[in-house]
Structure formats: C-alpha cells, structure tokens
Length: 319
Image (cartoon, rainbow, N blue to C red):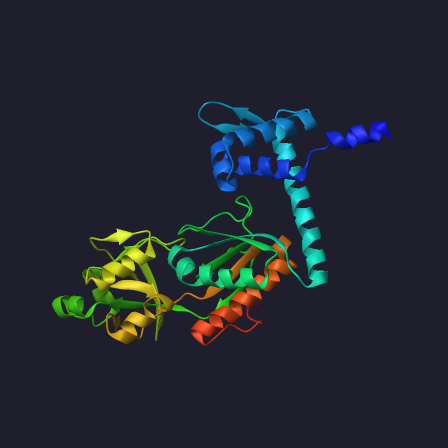
C-alpha cells in the first residue's frame, strides 16, 4: 500500500499539465503567466515540479525564448489527449445533469465581438453560472487546435473543411459612404467606377486586401479598390466612412443604424457580399454539451437583434 501511495504521489497533476500545454503554445513563461494571471515564477515552479514527477526535461530555457524538447513534444501530445478526455468527461456528466460546466475559449472579430458577442456571453454566464467563458478578439484567423480555441464566432462563408460550422444568423456586406463624400465625389454608377473612387480598405481576418468580390444580378464580380486610408480594424474604417473619407464595404449589422438615420448612404444597392455569421468548432467537440448550449443560446440572442435566424438544419458538417 505504501508503495502504491508513493507512486500515486509522483503522478503529475492536471493543473501542471495545463500549465505546460499553455507554456508550449505561448512559447514562454511570461505569456503563459499573463494569460493565467499569475507570476512567471509560479509558472516556472509548476513546470519544474512536472519535470521532476516525470523525470524528463520538457523545455529548453534561454534568456530570450523557451523551446520544447523532444521529450516535451511527446508529453505535450499526451497532455493534450488527457486534458481533452477530462474535458469530455466533465462535459458528458454536465449533459446528463443538464447543467453545462467547464471552460469555453471563444474567439471572434473586434467590432462584432464588442457589440454582439460580449453582451450575449454576459447573459449566457448568468444563465449558466458553472460555465467559465473566455472571449478573445482578433481580426486575423487563428489555428483553433494549436491555440486551444473551442468556438470561433466567424463572419463569412469561407470555412476550412476540417471544421464544423453552424449558421447563427443571415448577414451580408454592403457598400456605403457618407452623404458629404458622395456630394463631393459623386456616386458611382457601376462597380467598375469603384476602382477610381477613394475606398476605405480593410484587412479583416481571411479577406484579401483591396479585392472586393460582390454578388450582382449577373453573378459574382470582382473589383480592385484603393484609397489613402486603410486599416485592419473594422471600427476604424467605419468611423472614417462616417467622416466622409471614402466608400466602405461593411457588414449590414455594422452600418444598419447609420443608414436608417441618414448618416450613411447605401451605394450600388444591387451589389452585396455574403457574410453570414457562423459558430465554428473542431470535430472533437461535435457532441459537447457546452458547445451545444452556447451555440443555441447565440442563435436565439441574434434572433432578437436580427429578427431572422438560421434554421437548425442549416449547417456545414465536414470530417
């Protein structure tokens, strides 16, 4: 019995495996410490204890960076599988109890995250207090597996085939400009005239820079646009558009209120760009209770704001 107790005491604990996985993903103690809200010294101590319990060196440490060792690579793969299994166990138990619990790491874009996803998650947290929700915003696509992301609330229909996606709401992008801009520059009569107009170009997530693909009565058309102002942040482009700096291609949810108030004008209304709102996740979470609850909650939340929501049957399922 004493021998078995000694062996059990030497086994690594889950929290140390979680710390190690995070350090490996972030390639540094300081970044992992910042994410967990602890000191780098605490991270270093937990890694040292894990290395002692496993009797291996997991990381190469230098003054500038941390790299994972060959043994560390093997332990990293095992740790991911163990943590995923534990997460699935908790998820299945919570599904039986009809009370989802555990951590859910969610990402989305800046503007949509601030205006819609953040308040939705605030309500979700009240309804399901045992869920721990972490929301990150980024206007670039992230690798969901390597970054440990559970759910990506994404705008746009171009989704990788290894991911599962469920449509949350209908949406499209439209061309718009301030009345003052159009009074000065003139309103374009066709799509080709956009190439000669000052346009507000945005590099947003996976969308090509300066290439606008739009759907018209004759199908898809492409135009190359340029302008003196460009940004990777949608809200900045929106503000420039309101200030009369150029024509912008923005999601309908983003400019709807300003068009209704007359602060912006819908330009070339016969052209739109599909940009539906999706909940995207990896296949291992296909049966996750917390994913299911969150996606359904978001569908109903967006219905309150859009008045139209995608049916449950409308989804992309790929393996």
